[in-house]
Length: 363
Ligand code: IPM
Ligand code: MG
Image (spheres, rainbow, N blue to C red):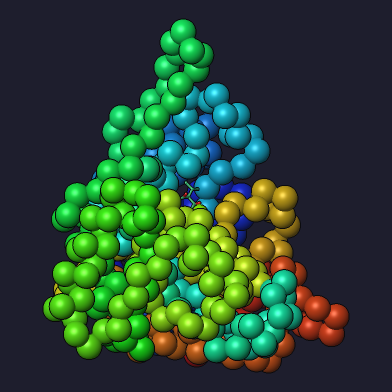
């Protein structure tokens, strides 16, 4: 089969890790007889430099025509001035909105061989394997009004947390369906003791739980959830929550795995279990890591694991997805590490070597 993939390499280590992910895709293509047509387009700081905008029209058009989008990372100190009219992150928010990517899927599973790289005790990390579904196109990030002004009492600012029933229902559906194909436990995270949007969220979650009687649902306040994530993380199977809560909780959850360099993500425009192919954007959780950019030492595994999600959700090629995940597991088991997770005695290898290793394990 033939697939079109738009690659938004972005800034810093972005192009270094997407290059390895693309090589892995080519290897899969040879082995399983698929053809991939990659179109590279701009996003983030490099796009601001070249086009004056963080997401040019060509990037949107190409992405919309593709089967899936692969993204590296955006941002860097060069574009960090808080009063700049346009920031690299604007490109990320714009592509999410343009493609309607309302469900952000962030799996958190701990590789038993890597527990040493977490700051948490390894017994706390035993059996940790859950998925966070974060709502991605609503809430405080996009709600209007969103602005600043000045009056006699000084500077003022407002952001708006707004959610419609439709927005809540579709992302909760992803949570319920995901729980159904996993261990049938769903934790819906909100702040229903304070926020009106959360009360609506919880009301809808309770209504939907009547349609999903096979899924055990609990409702957890976000402050409690943030505590439970480090206290007893193996209790979770699927967590579903709104945009800002999900942003914060997923950074916290990344600590469990020790390295941001191991965590993939998928952002989808449809409930992935509805059978049809889903438009999606796939990116590692980590940022552009400007301090190590250009050194060839970045860990490409999060980006490579994101490709596995791309195969699973956008191309519906489960066997290929599992093959990639197994190859990554094997590389870790055999003691190969990039610098971010290496200890004395490990085989420390470069970005390119890790990419080549995964490809060779796939052949
Ligand atoms: C993320 C990031 C982004 C977000 C930033 C870079 C805009 O933190 O993907 O989690 O807040 O969504
Ligand atoms: Mg974040």
